[in-house]
Amino acid sequence: MTAEIRRHPDAETLAADVASALLARLEESQSSPGAVTHVALTGGSIAEAIHREVARRAADASVDWSRVALWWGDERFVARDSSDRNAHQAREDLLDRVALDPGNVHEVPASDDVPDVEAAAASYADEVRSQGAGEFDLVMLGVGPDGHVASLFPGRPELQVTGAVTVAVRESPKPPPERVSLTFEALARARAVWFVVNGEGKAEAVARALADEGTIEETPARGVHGRDETVWWIDEEAASHLPR
Ligand code: 6PG
Image (cartoon, rainbow, N blue to C red; front, side):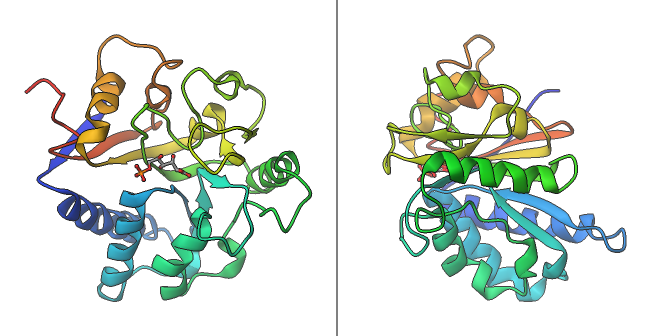
């Protein structure tokens, strides 16, 4: 199944369009009574802009947030109240502004919850598996300039992990150094994958990810596809190395 590319003039428009599409997808998924929609959020700057836009639009949408379950594709192993923590930023930008059921917000344990990053990864894996097949209706992923997604970086052993839904990452090339990431196997359980990417600095990574040839080892974003849908939400700068 080929990926769909949705180009936007700039990051602001990109964030607004993704936010609107996310709210629409949540509304649509809730048409079956009682269904809980599982969404894995991502860290990063464009994700923060998207979260803020979702919060801004939420009042005009008919989403029952108590039926939205939130996860993270990766998380930094830092203190729970650290501004470096993806969940901490997401709470400020979105989670504290909508009526979620706290039992449906699945944060990765923080460094003040468990002794080490391996324990955090194990605990998060238990939580993912506790939700049945550990499937996600939607996984959102930022992409690094090196083509990393979540905390799966080029050339790293975490890319080879099988038989696990999470992996502990030490000495991450992107600070902070310790992280927990979903594995490719976990990400492969996503029905829909939305990559959200802006800026000239990502243009090479986007081109490598979407090229006919290339390796997952060099460009981890090549290793993630939704079972039903894969969409690249990009702005013109991030699209600038794509063939016209
Ligand atoms: C993290 C993110 C990471 C991020 C990309 C893009 O925890 O750092 O999950 O995978 O999404 O590095 O980040 P930017 O959008 O800020 O470039």
